[in-house]
Length: 78
Image (cartoon, rainbow, N blue to C red; front, top):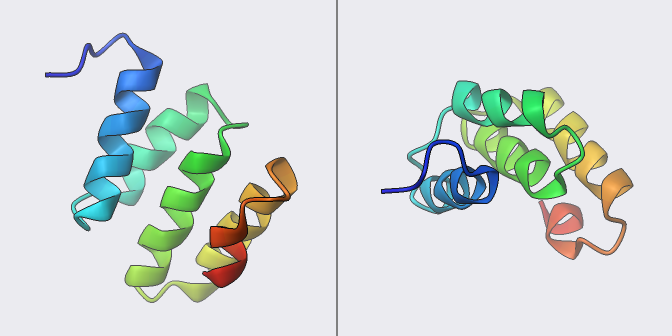
């Protein structure tokens, strides 16, 4: 089990849940509140929003991720 106080462990857990399509927007937003410059969380939010057919929110999240990390090519694919 991930240490609930370890930010990297929490990030990895959310990313793994994103791969399984088992994460919620709320879970991601909790982590974004403490680390808004983590482009991987913005990517996770974007893909989660896209899966829920919320394309405007997905577009905004992809855009935020690419501003933070311009070479994050997966965002452009999304």
